[in-house]
Length: 165
Length: 280
Image (cartoon, rainbow over all chains, first blue to last red; front, side):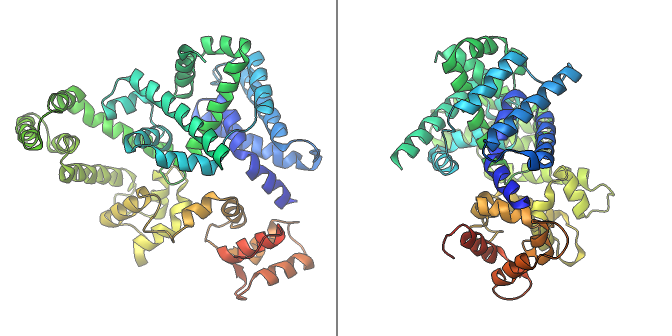
């Protein structure tokens, strides 16, 4: 039983993190929610209908947990109204997971060194854009724009790589 | 997708959560915006997953950030940035002379670490290394809680926000018999971790293995993180404590060298057999 749960959890944990991270932008709160949801999934695993999607089940529990937290504490860092959260949840269920890790690694390797360094400062060192701007001697807006552009580049590259594979 | 929405989206995912009102309107009214939002969320999460695997925790990053800010406050960025821009078109020799002049000027006004950092930013790697060494020393002093000049694993774990267990074997290797890191051992270990979590430290392919599904399964079984799955760890992943003859048999078959633990290769072979694949 442990093993079946583990396989499902490992397969979907990245997407679960993506969903929680799309709603809760503060890292510590995000991690709290993720861990709470993981615990609930484990406890409720016996009752999970195996014919349904594990990912959708996990996201549903996460959405409820976030709503509950938001109701209990108005300062809980969620930027959206419940109605918008509901739409995002539906979109996660319906939009195909359109990238693969192997393709992402390939595309990251293709990036020029300065772009890669910028992504590392943002995602590896978890630095705020203001701090990245100081370190790289760019304006804060330029950092925001470059990061957005890099994400679009990576997404396009991933799509292309998957299509060519 | 218009560029204004792209900007909103970028700011949201890069930390400006207070500016989500316009984003929220788009998400409610535009299916394309919603799709873009989900794709960006998935990509951001994948990037974090990929890039954070081999690096320090957010706590360490915050600490390093405060060090950088401290240095920048002493030597404002424009002091460094302006000459760099002005000299960008000069030939190398002229650039070097100009950099030296600025360095001497700064020497009068700044303390040594800031000067090293400034020279490092100007391209003098030796000084940047010296600056980084000083930063490492500060970190070492800060996390050497008992101030005995050596860092225990517990203190090292504090530096990584309680998540240093993944570096435990590297720690043991660098610390030697006394199980504590001297400053130079600490620097060597940190460098090894920074360099891709061990291109030289870990066995070839280990990073890729850790990132793979099999690697994650292995990590889940390997409860104490020692790189081996014991019989108890193996059985625990199934029905919990008790007698499980069929599982015992599986373990015996998988333990090809009979040492009563499954190493990485034996584990992967077991997984492959289970899923109908071939042994490596």
